[in-house]
Length: 251
Image (cartoon, rainbow, N blue to C red; front, top):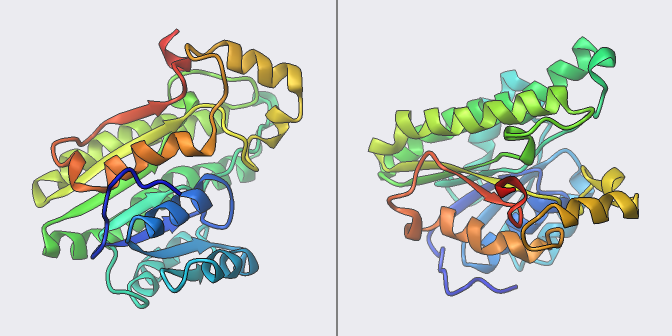
């Protein structure tokens, strides 16, 4: 896995949603770049599989992030394997794809909790150690739906619109302490969340055709942007949403 010459040795990263998809890719990438990584998700077996191939650089932390009242416990547990994290990547998320007229209070609450509340409250719990070090990186996951409305995406879009504004507010609150907060907004990448999209070849092709580049995303397309935002290269970059979407939102 190419790390583009970026060395994160000496840093501890915490990655949520690390059992699959872009979260798993993020955990593997940061470990390859020299960071020690705490991988958080509900599925213990998948985390154990991830850690087994990392030669001790990844520690699994099974945790149900939807239990908002225990996020401070999660932050404390994340500090045990390697010390307090100074990088956090919030890749955990859910998209119920309920039409507006069928959204339930339960679906709404689950979506807003995991996509919006968890990144804030977990970051809040990790910030004191970052502040003490005078260095930290928070990377949220925004979305195409941070800026555009999609069918069946009202709750998800509301949460991801919130992520964009939360990222700016985090930067305003914490960047003077050396803690930069930014977000990556992926376009269409094949993950568990987007499997329904890619299961329809015509739909996937239409999405690709709407990008400036003319294709959907590949996992490696996120590597450079993520490493940049997690490293000293982004020292003067904060409060930004970097869309990694092949130009989808540019058209």
